[in-house]
Amino acid sequence: MAIKNLRYKRLLIAPITAALFLSACTNAAQNKTKEAENEQIVDTHSDDGKDLIGLSMPSQYLERWNRDGQYLKNLFEEMGYEVDLQFAGNMIDTQIDIIDEMIDSGVDILVIGAVDGLSLTKVIERAYYAGIPIVAYDRLICNTEYVSAYVSFDNYQVGRLQGEYVEEALDLKNAGRKSYNIEFTAGDSVDNNARYFFDGAMDVLSPYIEKGNLKIPSGQYDFYSVSTPQWSTESAHTRFEILIGSYYSGTNTLDAVVCSNDSTSLGVQDAISNNYQEKNSVVITGQDCDEENLKRLMNGSQSMDVYKNLSYEAYVTVKLVDSLYHGQEMSQELADGWNLGYTCVYDTTTYDNGKIVVPAFLLEPVAITKENAIEQLVDTYGTYVISDDGSLKVAE
Ligand code: BGC
Image (cartoon, rainbow, N blue to C red; front, side, top):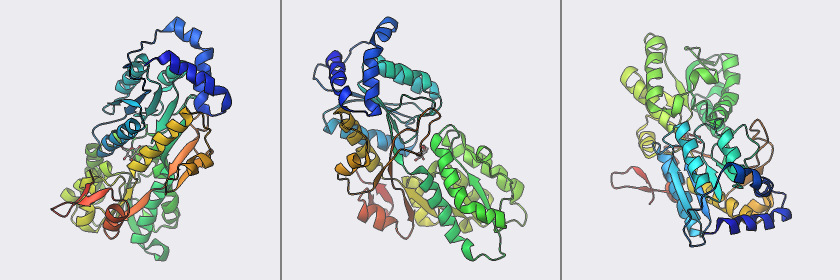
């Protein structure tokens, strides 16, 4: 494909829209000389005239990112784009290398689920000066003015759903003088989302901590003390084993654990199941509706999950990229015009990345329990099926 023609196309559409997306293209022109001086972009595209999307996903080790990658790839291909999909194994340097290579190979647009939202500043700048618009997928890319848009779920609401579940399960509104013990497990502190999840849950639960209805025997409740490097199941497991051994081996009962997602929830559940007597009485949250976690939801060891329909997230991303690529401006009307059949909010105030407030398209997360899992995931969304052994599996 003739990358030069594509650049020319971008320059033509740039004046008719104020969208940030296209400022990358305009700047491509202004900085062409600079870029040409510094680097030579090699056009390795096939000659089929298709525009190439560089899809950089954070990790192949968690169920969700594989699904995101596959949904995005299929949808972009259906829309006539070519796709270079790569996973970074949760490694910051690997992701930077991948994006660098994508720039060198002449991708036209980058869609990035960041491993570490703060570490991509340089490579994003390089992409921008090469005229490549960047869309942040699921996780915000921070510390750069060169991100055009962000597509995600309402991350704060994810945390609120977890907090509200605990509030209801322990009947905290009517707790009177009763008190319960709770612990927290947050996500990776370098993932911008992790903070939003944690704050959402905390905003629901902290009034009860202040009133004394919730106690935290470990004393660990600030974000950094409870965060989990790489969202790792093993790290969450190890931390919880220590925590149970130190604070719950005597008479203290453990009533609830807020886990920001499913991978950390697995570690916490395993630590509880191996080390804590009253294992089935602990209220435990999660997020993602991974298959193993849904199994545990059904057998009672996980109390709730938060469902984020990844096919919606991928679809919105593809529609957004395609709309912007064709010169449309970002607005609520743009999203409404996609006739999604589900809520997608255009938000221009929440996602301050340290340099700019990144315009965001946000989807709604849903609380899942044993009671509503089949009705929501199988009957309503149709994204899961009941397999022969009765467990819920992602629909092919
Ligand atoms: C995602 C979650 C996921 C976590 C770990 C977050 O950024 O929003 O869905 O569980 O990363 O991969």
